[in-house]
Image 1 (tube, one colour):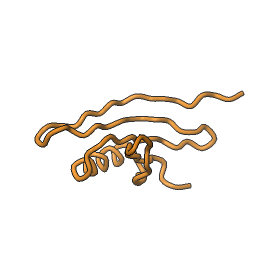
Image 2 (cartoon, helix red, strand yellow; image 1 turned 135 degrees about the horizontal axis):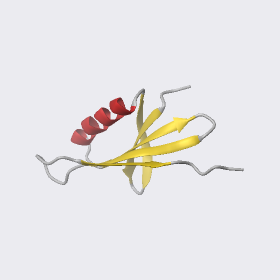
Image 3 (cartoon, helix red, strand yellow; image 1 turned 90 degrees about the horizontal axis):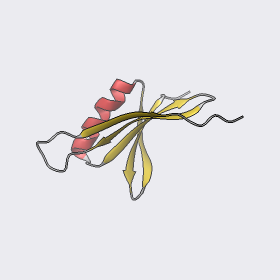
Image 4 (spheres, one colour; image 1 turned 90 degrees about the vertical axis):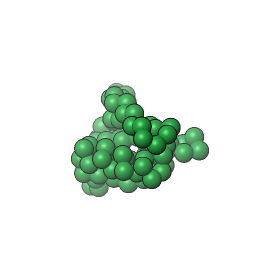
Length: 82
């Protein structure tokens, strides 16, 4: 199995895979670094075997230099199928 945390960037109305990380902290640090170079909106998802995908966090780059980006942290669990 690959790395569990995937980083996606929202572009042209749909998310695009950027890279994966081993931990949530590593993924968040990488998103901040990526946002410095390529501003935009990023998402971190957690792939869970047999359970689907859990959306963990969203990050929006600042509109101007010198300001901080904004994290939105939430959990969106996949719907259970019966």
